[in-house]
Length: 602
Image (cartoon, rainbow, N blue to C red; front, side):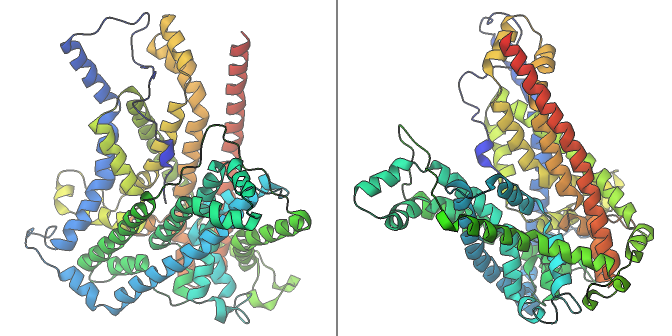
């Protein structure tokens, strides 16, 4: 997934208060020795912690993949430094690997076009039209965005597969590459919606007025003026969707497998799970996948970067809402149908599979049962797997939040080469598919000599938690840094001038105002880790599957009803946890706003 770079604060912005400075008036310029100790202190606060975490969690696994592809004997016993292209040769000679690579490329291109078109339409309706219930639809966009892809893919597999609700009349047409493309487009269009919404908000109404004064009609203004100015947003949305398709493992392991449509991410998993394990070919496919994403990203930057798209001038006015007239309610119904297809259909298919004895027998009381829910509760690695996922996700979210906060403090206090290195590492890691990063963890940590020195993390929940942290850290750092950049400088400076200590500033000003954002970050990482699939499939310890692994195992074992019931129970359980924590977040936010209001009155 692509993180919000715009949330990264400018460390060189003027007027940022030093949270660790001594209280009182501004001191005299410190000596060289004093500045040296201060630099060491700043470095010790957050810099090396976040940098070390980024190197260990992201850089070393990626280097392990690269070395494994070119030096297949590097991690052997004894190790060998002989260069070899055996992995790439095996990939070139493997029809399954070649077909999966071609399928992924074509699927990514087709999905990028369709999802970007859908996302642009939704963004226009939500941003510059008088569509009814826009807040409700905006929330639905976020619901689609946050839904795990493997649950969406599995729901459609239940609907379209043999014996499914629609398998008899629609399964043949939709259980195909075209169906996979449509499902991925329905899942990924929010990425394009977010980017195009930002582009539309940047356009000024004066642009349309200038076109109208020149005699252009509304359609001409959009075709010749506004759409060209939206090229960066449209291109960025398409690129994000393309990268997400190449990186996706959830649909690749569910709907695409049911459609006999091999994709690269699942081919990498197959190579790692084969016996004997084909490490070199898996590494070669991983390198190819990452290189393809990077090349497309570079091409997009060059193509867009050579043109000017400035749209903000003095007196900028937002686009005035466009009246839909008699099509207003029709557009609302159409948009509602889009969300029904994106979320409602797979959810209903999963729910029906969990309560019906025979899915295709129709709705009658004799066909209903609760046996699958009893089996989901009693089956080994059922609800216990969900409980384990909650614990691991909570630990990972807490550690990720801690690292993100430390890095945000470090960026606020100082800037330099260290901060830029961390930024580059975290930005690069966003484009790395989870299955590739998980493969890197296997190459790096499955080493006998690490166990000999007490670092035998492979096959433990510790390594799985580290994988969860690696996937959530880029977003946590950016969100925490964005919130840190918005702290009111006047309050901090006034507190320092009034003699407040660092502890008082942190406890009375910083923490109360940032706590709601920190809780949102924790919730985001936690919810994502509970149903995380690619890392979990590769790194879960024997006999300790996570919720996603246990659910997929039930489906692959043809225990369809039990798998569907486990999906429903786990989803409801996660929803209940998030609902409780969201209520706490709302109370915390109201408390902060009340304190700020009272402080302003006093």
